[in-house]
Length: 309
Image (cartoon, rainbow, N blue to C red):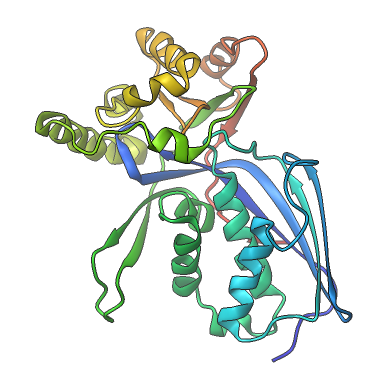
């Protein structure tokens, strides 16, 4: 087993999970990418540099999420490098519900695999995806980050091979007319915090309504975008999270009152609104509604997922 000489660069997209009713199951890759460059050093040591999102705040040691993910990949492959150099160019906002942690995990795993000659023969795609889901804790964001496009992901109670859980992901079509506008607040929230606001049980009627909207959302994203407004109505999680992000839910309410298919992106507080093309008049009007101080991005759906450059 040998390491690849010279640096390797991968890019990985932002993601939006839940998409309204698809709690912990639906995810969409967005064309806003982090870029990670790794290199094996012949001498011992770890060098980590970061530019962009997280610069000056994320750790630059073994606790860095990309480094931890790379170590996990090397562990599966069966060989740790003597030394490692990593540079991260981050465009995905942190703690905003846009999948920055999933991008770090998928990017780190794929980068490490690419730094080992024949690494894909040992760490195949299924194993890599399962490892990513284990690190993240759930598969709904790592699935679109890895596979691209629109994914439906989840976990079985037991796999055919006898392991405790088995993650799955199915990629399905996205209508090419669909784009999104994301409104990113200045201050983020921690996923753990907003998950703590959710009740242990919900009314049966709400669960049934959410299941119906989730099914409709799959159809709407595939080839019926005219149904996106109805399909993005959530009954399970967004309203319970309002105390942690009142401005975000107020923007969702305002946009939906005008017929816009708007949702909280992932755990929030970013708001995502579906539109019809990044250069369309509809998108321009939506972007103009960005609250003062927030950042707005008009984005296509990313169909590629993680890429090695």
